[in-house]
Length: 170
Image (cartoon, rainbow, N blue to C red):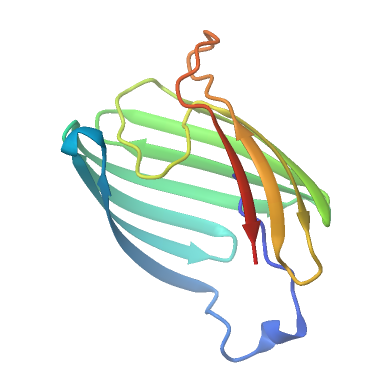
């Protein structure tokens, strides 16, 4: 799902605003069926509309190190594009392209592809999927959106991990 820039307000020049570049680290532990657990450790650097992160994931199925980069581009006031690339141990490679159009009522579409090498998901997005969505952004910056992410990684029409997401963010 595309990350949407927050609307700019007069408060954007406030001294409490987060610096233009920053680091963020996170640790997660997941519990799966069958009493299996997984854990991940990530370090993310953000600068303007670019993100670079490195991560490590470990569960009962294996361990993987990953590096990811993504960047948002504004083509004009109504259209933004996000590109991303990932590289992981075990020769895993992934890339995606997503576009979001309009302002108050918006639409988004994207596609992601990977080289079918083994990988362990450090996020919850499908790596071989099509993304379609729509939403409404209120004047106070809150949004309501609906996104459908059918998994089509092998082009066989088999369904692996389709999902639909409905969000309301204040």
